[in-house]
Amino acid sequence: MPQATWDDFARLDIRVGTILKVQPFPEARKPAYQLWIDFGPIGIKSSSAQITRLYHPETLIGRQVIAVVNFPPKQIAHFKSECLVLGVMAENQEVILLQPDRPVANGLRIG
Image (cartoon, rainbow, N blue to C red; front, side, top):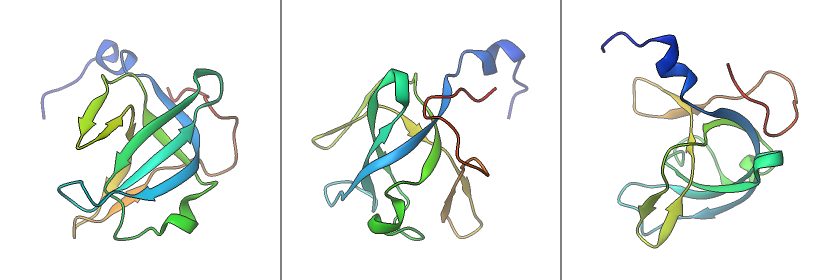
């Protein structure tokens, strides 16, 4: 990977949000869920997340996650994904969600 600068990092708007709603997304090419995430002052944003191997919908509701919220929206099938939920890519291609280690206010910036 090329070396990034502080300016590169500063252009990303990375925030904490709480998952409000989860739906299966059978139209996605790879198994995914549709998520609706509350980012406090910037509102609720949708995301398509390929996290079906380790997470079930009922365990995701109320979970805080970290996401990039200033990428352009991406159309995936009939769904508009407005943010990128961040996770660690494990050796077996399972995604482990990043989250704060204690509850914080929705919308707080990572930096």
